[in-house]
Image (cartoon, rainbow, N blue to C red; front, side, top):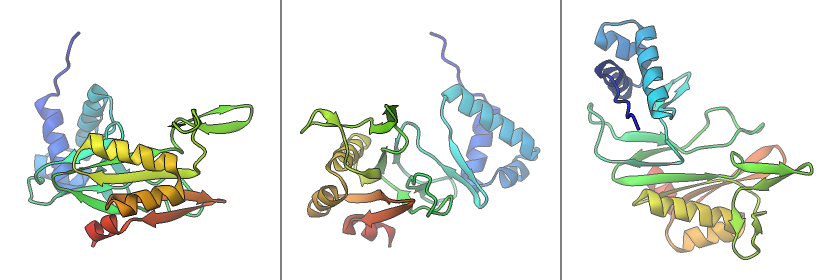
Amino acid sequence: MRILSPSLVELHAFLGVVRHGSFRRAADELCVTQAAVSRAVARLESHLGVRLFDRTASGVRLTAAGGELRGQGVKPNGDPWWVALARPASVGAAEGDSDIVALHGVAVATSGVDQKFFAANGRRYSHLLDPRTGQPSAAGLASVSVVAGSCMRADALATAIAVLGPDEGFDFARSRGIAALLLSREGDRLVEAMTPALGAMLE
């Protein structure tokens, strides 16, 4: 199997965007056009098969690859790695509305029931199976994000909480000091439940 290594141009473009949170400022630093930086990052994303940044009106954010992300150390300018907790699309929520967590020696995982499902006979079914029933989970949560010491622990906890549902899942997380954000749907809006452990991290 041939492994494609990123070029120095792609790496410099990526690091410039990470440092400045902006394609334009990265281009200024590298003395190239913004289009050149954008193309280099797009090539890197294509090689890796993941989207590295969320592009928003206010700038760019490092994004997760595969649902889990661990932050170690700090960016070259001394800032921590800031990560936006995922929120599914909702009529009642503004696009890009999110809680921002500093990943410094911790990991975050999101179990997005709204993003992964299958449809049969006009009904949507979760990709998560409830071990108590052997059936797709019908817990009613749209998304669960967990911050923990490792990707494996964060992913396992997010999945367990998603299967338990909004009430039992929240009680499970709160009683164990788990930093979690639970989002459930009520009609066309999202209802948020944040555990005290996560609230303390955001202060």
